Length: 269
Image 1 (tube, one colour):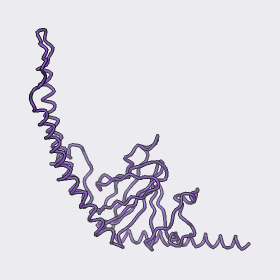
Image 2 (image 1 turned 135 degrees about the horizontal axis):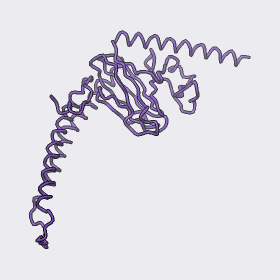
Image 3 (image 1 turned 180 degrees about the vertical axis):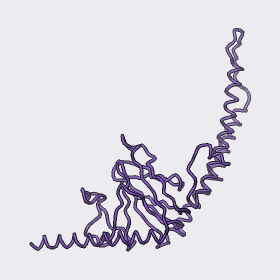
Image 4 (image 1 turned 120 degrees about the vertical axis):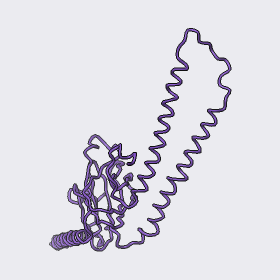
């Protein structure tokens, strides 16, 4: 049994999640030790320095250097955490992304756009290339401002107020951003989260190891309806995923062609 089980944290469903859970478990055990130590000290101080009618003031203060040694010890422990646990785990994640995932042309890629108070998922379609976007093009029909004249965006499609779909056992890359304020895209069972910053796309990646229907939340206070900014993640079979992408992409390309045809006819008149 892990100490994390006491907090009812959802089970891990990502390849890297075991390392994250292990580090969190170690940190929580040490937090427990600190909690017990400070609690004992608290009651000792209460008893030792309880108000007494015969109390005598000390004009010399503490002469021992124990407190200094304790402070140095705390600094050393924190340095061990950073250098021994956090930094190596982060370095492994970034190194793997640069060496493997970024060079995997077939890895599913999805743009995640946060907005008050929902998520929009932008898939690049069958060509695997995202169309150009421009916030000045956003309107009631073009939710994220995809350039209708960019050939790379003809087969792009959006999932708004729906589930993010990804294949199981494949490295998946998400490029997160925001249209308004800072949000935080978090999928707890996948042990990932990342701030969504307006005007900036930040990549994040993970590898689901099991089929699952789970939740997506915004982990950054973003306004009055922040609590309603929930979403869903569906990890499905690879064949089902690619068939779904193919169909949605073809539908988007067909609509784009019809729209361009209508535009040409209108202009010719």
